[in-house]
Length: 331
Ligand SMILES: O=C(O)CCC(=O)C(=O)O
Ligand SMILES: [Fe+2]
Picture 1 (cartoon, rainbow, N blue to C red):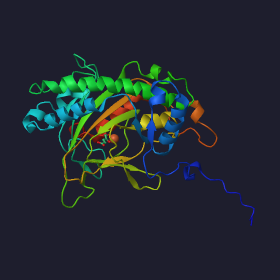
Picture 2 (cartoon, rainbow, N blue to C red):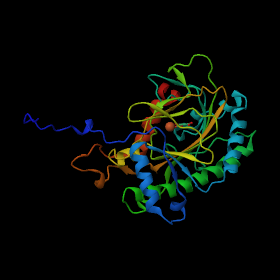
Picture 3 (spheres, protein in one colour):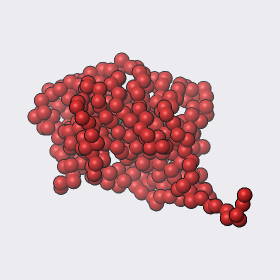
Picture 4 (cartoon, helix red, strand yellow):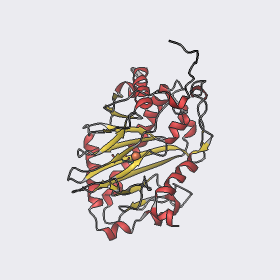
Protein backbone atom coordinates (compact mmCIF):
# COMPACT_ATOMS: atom_id res chain seq x y z
CA UNK A 1 0.00 0.00 0.00
CA UNK A 2 1.35 3.42 -0.86
CA UNK A 3 0.24 6.64 0.82
CA UNK A 4 2.27 8.69 -1.62
CA UNK A 5 5.00 9.55 0.89
CA UNK A 6 8.44 8.55 -0.28
CA UNK A 7 10.83 8.13 2.60
CA UNK A 8 14.25 9.70 2.31
CA UNK A 9 16.50 8.13 4.87
CA UNK A 10 19.14 10.31 6.44
CA UNK A 11 22.47 8.62 5.78
CA UNK A 12 23.12 8.37 9.51
CA UNK A 13 20.14 6.01 9.78
CA UNK A 14 21.31 3.66 7.09
CA UNK A 15 22.44 0.22 8.23
CA UNK A 16 25.50 0.05 6.09
CA UNK A 17 27.71 -2.25 8.05
CA UNK A 18 27.21 -5.96 8.37
CA UNK A 19 27.34 -7.22 11.90
CA UNK A 20 29.84 -9.82 13.00
CA UNK A 21 30.09 -12.26 15.85
CA UNK A 22 33.69 -13.21 15.18
CA UNK A 23 36.56 -11.00 14.12
CA UNK A 24 37.58 -12.16 10.63
CA UNK A 25 40.92 -13.93 10.08
CA UNK A 26 42.80 -12.89 6.95
CA UNK A 27 45.64 -14.95 5.55
CA UNK A 28 48.08 -12.36 4.16
CA UNK A 29 50.58 -14.78 2.56
CA UNK A 30 49.36 -13.89 -0.94
CA UNK A 31 49.76 -10.17 -0.20
CA UNK A 32 53.32 -10.60 1.06
CA UNK A 33 54.49 -12.77 -1.85
CA UNK A 34 52.29 -10.83 -4.29
CA UNK A 35 50.76 -14.03 -5.66
CA UNK A 36 47.15 -12.84 -5.17
CA UNK A 37 47.14 -9.37 -3.66
CA UNK A 38 43.65 -8.55 -4.87
CA UNK A 39 42.06 -11.52 -3.13
CA UNK A 40 43.67 -10.42 0.15
CA UNK A 41 42.67 -6.80 -0.50
CA UNK A 42 39.05 -7.88 -0.86
CA UNK A 43 39.12 -9.65 2.48
CA UNK A 44 40.78 -6.64 4.08
CA UNK A 45 38.01 -4.44 2.69
CA UNK A 46 35.27 -6.58 4.23
CA UNK A 47 37.04 -6.73 7.58
CA UNK A 48 37.87 -3.04 7.88
CA UNK A 49 34.52 -1.78 6.65
CA UNK A 50 32.45 -4.05 8.89
CA UNK A 51 34.54 -4.88 11.94
CA UNK A 52 37.40 -2.37 11.77
CA UNK A 53 39.41 -5.31 13.09
CA UNK A 54 40.94 -8.47 11.65
CA UNK A 55 43.42 -11.10 12.67
CA UNK A 56 46.25 -11.66 10.22
CA UNK A 57 48.02 -14.99 9.84
CA UNK A 58 51.04 -16.03 7.77
CA UNK A 59 52.55 -12.60 8.43
CA UNK A 60 56.15 -13.81 8.35
CA UNK A 61 57.19 -12.93 11.91
CA UNK A 62 58.27 -16.03 13.87
CA UNK A 63 56.18 -16.70 16.98
CA UNK A 64 59.36 -17.56 18.94
CA UNK A 65 60.58 -14.04 18.43
CA UNK A 66 57.26 -12.56 19.55
CA UNK A 67 57.38 -14.82 22.63
CA UNK A 68 60.87 -13.57 23.50
CA UNK A 69 59.54 -10.00 23.44
CA UNK A 70 56.71 -11.02 25.77
CA UNK A 71 59.28 -12.58 28.13
CA UNK A 72 61.38 -9.44 28.40
CA UNK A 73 58.29 -7.28 28.67
CA UNK A 74 57.18 -9.38 31.68
CA UNK A 75 60.62 -8.85 33.24
CA UNK A 76 60.26 -5.11 32.78
CA UNK A 77 56.88 -4.91 34.47
CA UNK A 78 58.25 -7.07 37.32
CA UNK A 79 60.83 -4.36 38.17
CA UNK A 80 60.17 -2.41 41.38
CA UNK A 81 57.72 0.46 40.90
CA UNK A 82 60.41 2.98 41.93
CA UNK A 83 62.62 1.89 38.99
CA UNK A 84 59.74 2.10 36.54
CA UNK A 85 58.74 5.53 37.80
CA UNK A 86 62.27 6.79 37.09
CA UNK A 87 61.35 6.33 33.41
CA UNK A 88 57.99 8.07 33.73
CA UNK A 89 56.52 9.42 30.50
CA UNK A 90 56.31 12.94 31.99
CA UNK A 91 60.15 13.04 31.98
CA UNK A 92 60.14 12.77 28.19
CA UNK A 93 58.25 16.05 27.77
CA UNK A 94 56.06 15.95 24.63
CA UNK A 95 57.92 12.96 23.16
CA UNK A 96 55.53 10.84 25.28
CA UNK A 97 57.95 7.97 25.76
CA UNK A 98 58.51 5.95 28.89
CA UNK A 99 56.52 4.32 31.68
CA UNK A 100 52.85 4.98 32.47
CA UNK A 101 51.54 3.63 35.76
CA UNK A 102 48.05 2.20 36.41
CA UNK A 103 45.49 5.03 36.14
CA UNK A 104 48.12 7.26 34.50
CA UNK A 105 46.34 7.09 31.15
CA UNK A 106 42.59 6.67 30.93
CA UNK A 107 41.16 6.11 27.50
CA UNK A 108 37.53 6.56 28.56
CA UNK A 109 38.19 9.12 31.29
CA UNK A 110 34.58 10.08 32.00
CA UNK A 111 33.68 6.51 32.89
CA UNK A 112 36.65 4.26 33.51
CA UNK A 113 40.08 4.21 35.09
CA UNK A 114 42.60 2.02 33.28
CA UNK A 115 44.36 -0.57 35.40
CA UNK A 116 46.94 -1.33 32.72
CA UNK A 117 50.55 -0.17 32.97
CA UNK A 118 52.49 0.69 29.81
CA UNK A 119 55.93 1.31 28.42
CA UNK A 120 56.16 3.35 25.21
CA UNK A 121 59.07 3.99 22.87
CA UNK A 122 59.65 4.89 19.25
CA UNK A 123 62.35 5.53 16.66
CA UNK A 124 65.55 6.60 18.44
CA UNK A 125 66.26 10.34 18.57
CA UNK A 126 69.11 11.96 20.49
CA UNK A 127 67.23 15.16 21.36
CA UNK A 128 63.65 16.28 21.73
CA UNK A 129 62.41 17.25 18.27
CA UNK A 130 58.74 17.82 19.07
CA UNK A 131 55.61 15.84 19.93
CA UNK A 132 56.23 12.07 19.59
CA UNK A 133 59.90 12.45 18.58
CA UNK A 134 62.58 12.45 21.24
CA UNK A 135 64.92 10.19 23.20
CA UNK A 136 63.60 6.87 24.49
CA UNK A 137 63.95 6.11 28.18
CA UNK A 138 65.39 2.63 28.71
CA UNK A 139 65.92 0.88 32.06
CA UNK A 140 69.65 0.45 32.77
CA UNK A 141 68.96 -2.65 34.87
CA UNK A 142 67.39 -4.53 31.93
CA UNK A 143 69.50 -3.95 28.78
CA UNK A 144 67.76 -6.85 26.99
CA UNK A 145 64.58 -4.80 26.91
CA UNK A 146 66.04 -2.39 24.43
CA UNK A 147 67.77 -5.08 22.36
CA UNK A 148 64.68 -7.22 21.91
CA UNK A 149 61.89 -4.69 21.75
CA UNK A 150 63.69 -2.33 19.40
CA UNK A 151 64.18 -5.18 16.94
CA UNK A 152 60.51 -6.02 17.31
CA UNK A 153 59.58 -2.42 16.59
CA UNK A 154 61.58 -2.56 13.33
CA UNK A 155 59.67 -5.66 12.29
CA UNK A 156 56.40 -3.92 13.07
CA UNK A 157 57.39 -0.95 10.87
CA UNK A 158 58.03 -3.40 8.02
CA UNK A 159 54.82 -5.35 8.50
CA UNK A 160 52.80 -2.14 8.78
CA UNK A 161 54.12 -0.97 5.41
CA UNK A 162 53.07 -4.26 3.82
CA UNK A 163 49.64 -4.09 5.40
CA UNK A 164 49.23 -0.49 4.25
CA UNK A 165 50.02 -1.65 0.73
CA UNK A 166 47.11 -4.11 1.07
CA UNK A 167 44.87 -1.43 2.56
CA UNK A 168 45.69 0.94 -0.32
CA UNK A 169 44.77 -1.78 -2.81
CA UNK A 170 41.59 -2.51 -0.87
CA UNK A 171 40.57 1.13 -1.45
CA UNK A 172 41.47 0.95 -5.17
CA UNK A 173 44.41 3.28 -4.57
CA UNK A 174 47.89 2.76 -5.95
CA UNK A 175 49.82 0.36 -3.74
CA UNK A 176 52.26 3.11 -2.71
CA UNK A 177 49.51 5.58 -1.79
CA UNK A 178 50.43 5.82 1.91
CA UNK A 179 54.15 6.33 1.31
CA UNK A 180 53.79 10.04 0.53
CA UNK A 181 52.06 10.56 3.89
CA UNK A 182 54.69 8.54 5.75
CA UNK A 183 58.20 9.88 5.18
CA UNK A 184 58.83 10.22 8.93
CA UNK A 185 55.68 8.80 10.48
CA UNK A 186 54.67 8.87 14.13
CA UNK A 187 55.47 5.36 15.28
CA UNK A 188 54.85 4.14 18.81
CA UNK A 189 55.66 0.73 20.20
CA UNK A 190 53.88 -0.01 23.45
CA UNK A 191 54.29 -2.81 25.96
CA UNK A 192 51.24 -3.44 28.13
CA UNK A 193 50.57 -5.31 31.35
CA UNK A 194 47.06 -5.92 32.67
CA UNK A 195 47.04 -7.08 36.29
CA UNK A 196 44.24 -9.57 36.96
CA UNK A 197 41.04 -8.29 38.55
CA UNK A 198 39.13 -10.43 40.99
CA UNK A 199 35.83 -10.10 42.81
CA UNK A 200 33.26 -7.68 41.46
CA UNK A 201 34.44 -5.87 38.31
CA UNK A 202 32.46 -2.79 37.32
CA UNK A 203 32.97 -0.24 34.56
CA UNK A 204 34.78 2.13 36.96
CA UNK A 205 38.04 0.20 36.73
CA UNK A 206 38.93 -2.19 33.91
CA UNK A 207 42.11 -3.02 32.00
CA UNK A 208 41.62 -0.36 29.35
CA UNK A 209 38.44 1.66 28.91
CA UNK A 210 36.38 1.63 25.72
CA UNK A 211 38.10 3.67 23.02
CA UNK A 212 38.96 3.90 19.37
CA UNK A 213 42.63 4.08 18.45
CA UNK A 214 43.79 7.52 17.46
CA UNK A 215 45.91 7.09 14.36
CA UNK A 216 46.07 4.99 11.23
CA UNK A 217 46.91 1.39 11.99
CA UNK A 218 47.47 -0.79 15.07
CA UNK A 219 49.21 -4.17 15.07
CA UNK A 220 48.64 -6.02 18.32
CA UNK A 221 50.25 -9.16 19.67
CA UNK A 222 48.37 -10.57 22.63
CA UNK A 223 49.30 -13.45 24.91
CA UNK A 224 46.96 -16.41 25.48
CA UNK A 225 45.03 -14.89 28.41
CA UNK A 226 42.21 -13.12 26.55
CA UNK A 227 40.11 -10.14 27.58
CA UNK A 228 40.07 -7.98 24.45
CA UNK A 229 36.53 -7.01 23.45
CA UNK A 230 35.41 -5.35 20.20
CA UNK A 231 32.02 -3.77 19.58
CA UNK A 232 29.80 -5.04 16.78
CA UNK A 233 27.04 -3.19 14.96
CA UNK A 234 24.44 -4.11 17.55
CA UNK A 235 26.55 -2.60 20.31
CA UNK A 236 27.47 -6.05 21.64
CA UNK A 237 31.02 -6.76 22.72
CA UNK A 238 32.63 -9.54 20.71
CA UNK A 239 35.58 -11.31 22.26
CA UNK A 240 38.92 -10.90 20.49
CA UNK A 241 40.01 -14.38 21.51
CA UNK A 242 43.75 -15.06 21.36
CA UNK A 243 44.64 -17.00 18.19
CA UNK A 244 48.17 -18.37 18.32
CA UNK A 245 50.49 -17.05 15.61
CA UNK A 246 48.28 -14.14 14.58
CA UNK A 247 48.32 -10.39 15.09
CA UNK A 248 45.17 -8.38 15.68
CA UNK A 249 45.01 -5.47 13.26
CA UNK A 250 42.69 -2.52 13.64
CA UNK A 251 42.43 0.95 12.23
CA UNK A 252 42.28 4.22 14.13
CA UNK A 253 40.41 7.50 13.76
CA UNK A 254 42.66 8.87 11.04
CA UNK A 255 42.04 6.03 8.62
CA UNK A 256 38.32 6.28 9.32
CA UNK A 257 38.51 10.00 8.47
CA UNK A 258 40.58 9.31 5.35
CA UNK A 259 37.94 6.86 4.14
CA UNK A 260 35.04 9.16 5.09
CA UNK A 261 33.73 6.40 7.42
CA UNK A 262 33.87 3.67 4.78
CA UNK A 263 36.35 1.97 7.10
CA UNK A 264 35.61 1.83 10.79
CA UNK A 265 37.80 2.75 13.75
CA UNK A 266 35.99 0.47 16.10
CA UNK A 267 35.45 0.67 19.86
CA UNK A 268 37.34 -1.83 21.95
CA UNK A 269 38.36 -2.37 25.56
CA UNK A 270 40.08 -4.96 27.73
CA UNK A 271 38.62 -6.68 30.78
CA UNK A 272 41.03 -9.13 32.37
CA UNK A 273 38.84 -11.37 34.51
CA UNK A 274 41.03 -14.44 33.89
CA UNK A 275 42.78 -14.35 37.25
CA UNK A 276 46.12 -14.27 35.35
CA UNK A 277 48.49 -11.48 34.38
CA UNK A 278 47.83 -10.41 30.79
CA UNK A 279 50.42 -8.88 28.46
CA UNK A 280 50.06 -7.38 25.00
CA UNK A 281 52.25 -5.51 22.52
CA UNK A 282 50.38 -2.90 20.50
CA UNK A 283 52.22 -1.05 17.77
CA UNK A 284 50.74 2.17 16.38
CA UNK A 285 51.74 3.65 13.07
CA UNK A 286 50.37 6.89 11.75
CA UNK A 287 51.40 9.43 9.15
CA UNK A 288 53.93 12.27 9.34
CA UNK A 289 53.15 14.81 12.05
CA UNK A 290 52.20 17.44 9.47
CA UNK A 291 50.48 15.10 7.00
CA UNK A 292 47.03 16.37 6.16
CA UNK A 293 44.33 13.73 6.49
CA UNK A 294 41.16 14.41 4.57
CA UNK A 295 38.55 12.16 2.98
CA UNK A 296 39.58 10.44 -0.23
CA UNK A 297 37.51 11.73 -3.19
CA UNK A 298 36.62 8.14 -4.05
CA UNK A 299 34.99 7.70 -0.62
CA UNK A 300 32.77 10.78 -0.96
CA UNK A 301 29.56 10.00 -2.84
CA UNK A 302 25.93 11.15 -2.92
CA UNK A 303 25.00 8.50 -0.42
CA UNK A 304 28.11 9.11 1.69
CA UNK A 305 28.64 12.87 1.67
CA UNK A 306 31.78 14.52 2.97
CA UNK A 307 31.95 14.02 6.73
CA UNK A 308 35.28 15.49 7.83
CA UNK A 309 37.40 18.59 7.54
CA UNK A 310 41.13 18.17 6.93
CA UNK A 311 43.19 17.67 10.06
CA UNK A 312 46.90 17.14 10.54
CA UNK A 313 47.89 13.75 11.83
CA UNK A 314 49.95 15.11 14.73
CA UNK A 315 47.38 17.63 15.87
CA UNK A 316 44.66 14.98 16.05
CA UNK A 317 46.83 12.39 17.73
CA UNK A 318 48.38 14.72 20.29
CA UNK A 319 44.94 16.08 21.17
CA UNK A 320 43.65 12.59 21.91
CA UNK A 321 46.67 11.77 24.07
CA UNK A 322 46.39 15.04 25.97
CA UNK A 323 42.81 14.14 26.86
CA UNK A 324 43.76 10.73 28.23
CA UNK A 325 47.07 11.32 30.05
CA UNK A 326 46.63 12.18 33.70
CA UNK A 327 49.98 14.03 33.80
CA UNK A 328 49.03 16.24 30.83
CA UNK A 329 45.51 16.88 32.11
CA UNK A 330 47.03 18.25 35.35
CA UNK A 331 49.55 20.44 33.53
O1 LIG B 1 45.81 -4.96 24.95
C1 LIG B 1 44.94 -5.03 24.09
O2 LIG B 1 44.46 -6.12 23.73
C2 LIG B 1 44.40 -3.79 23.46
C3 LIG B 1 45.22 -2.57 23.71
C4 LIG B 1 44.63 -1.33 23.12
O3 LIG B 1 43.50 -1.27 22.77
C5 LIG B 1 45.48 -0.14 22.96
O4 LIG B 1 46.60 -0.10 23.50
O5 LIG B 1 45.04 0.81 22.27
FE1 LIG C 1 43.27 0.37 21.40
